[in-house]
Image (cartoon, rainbow, N blue to C red):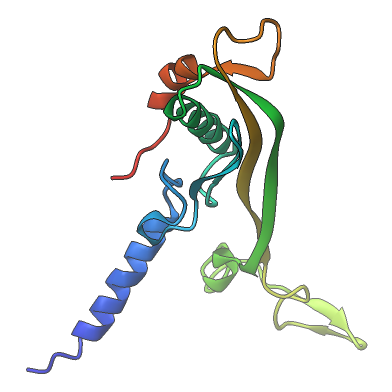
Length: 185
């Protein structure tokens, strides 16, 4: 008995695992953790000023990316002994890729599976052709979005500045957003 089925089975399993990994949102973790592309990163710019980023994959919504960014900013604030942080600048970038290919519907032979149904004809070069669709196979295009949020934050101690929409109480942010992010398994 030969073992020719082992290699295709291993390849199919690896492909299924790779697809499953891509189908889940980027967990809240440091960038590059477990070989994953997304996650959070920070850089100290001055004693109380940091640049914070969070990058998601194509399954991570814009809201999840921005929530993770604010949570990391709050954690950095508490880790550095501060009480609140203010966003000096904040932006979310959207990266769009367009994927295209022949639709599965056209590959199966259309609505009727290629056996029964209406026939296509078209007029070309002086005669009616009974063969094929003059417009070719259906071609699907799908947009794939990836978001990356970044902010420059300034840490502060004592009471949070009143009436400043860019100032956040770090402990309140952690309490409100900590349970809304997906942690690594």
